[in-house]
Amino acid sequence: MSQKRTLLEVAVFTPESAIIACQAGADRIELCSGYSEGGLSPSAASIKLVRQSVDCKLHVMIRPRIGDFLYSEFEKKIILEDIKFCKTTDVDGIVVGALTQGGDIDVDFVKIVIETAYPMQVTFHRAFDISRDLYFSLDVLISCGVNRVLTSGGKDSAFEGLQTITELVKQTADKITILPGGGITPENVLKILNATKTREVHFSGKRLIKSKMEPLSNVKLSSTTDTDDYNWFECDFEVVRKMVSRIN
Image: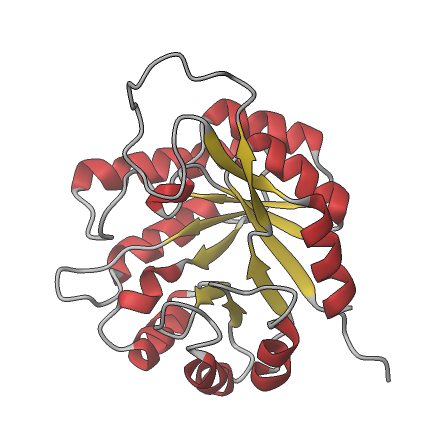
C-alpha cells in the first residue's frame, strides 16, 4: 500500500504571496495579514480576489486585532461577520481561536463559530499553544467538533515542541487533525513528520522584500523590528518548491 502524501499548508501575509504559494505547489494556503502582529484577518477584497485567483484550498485567518484571544462581545460579532463573508466567497475553511480569562478554550463561542462556519472547515490556531492545559484543551476542541489544531506543542517552534506534538497526535485517536507549525523549514520538516506521524504541515516559506522606492525622509510609519516601511515579507516560490519536494 502506498503511503499517503503529506499536505502542505502555506501561511501567506499578502494577496500576491497566496498566488505565489499556489503556483509553487501548496495544497492549501492560510491567508492572513499582519505578519509582524502574528497574523490578522485579511481584507474582504483580498479574500475575494485571492479566491478568484487560486485553485488550491483557501483557509482564512479570522483575528480582529493583535494581542490576546480573550474577545469582547463586540469583537466576537466581528469574527462571526467575517466568517459569514468567507462563506459567500467560497472559502474552504477559517482559522480562529478564542480563550477564556483563565486560559481555557472558550467553548460556547467556539461552538457558535463552528455552527456559523459550516460547511467550511475550522482550524483552531496557535492560541491553543498558550491555553492552560494543552491536553485538556485538545479534548475540548475534539468535543466541539473542530477539524484541526495548529500547534507548535506549546513552544516557540514545532521542533522544540516535538515531543508534545507527538503525544497530542496519539491522544487524538484520529478524531482531529494535528497540524504542526512554527519555525518549520525544508531542513527540519522530515524530522518533525517522522517523529509525529502527522500528514499535514504548516509553514510560511517567506523572504524579505526590499522596496524599490528611495527613502525620502527619516519619518517612520512602522514600529516593527523585522520589517519596516521599505521591507516586507512575501512568499518565496523556490522555498515552497523545496518544501514540496522534501515532503513528497
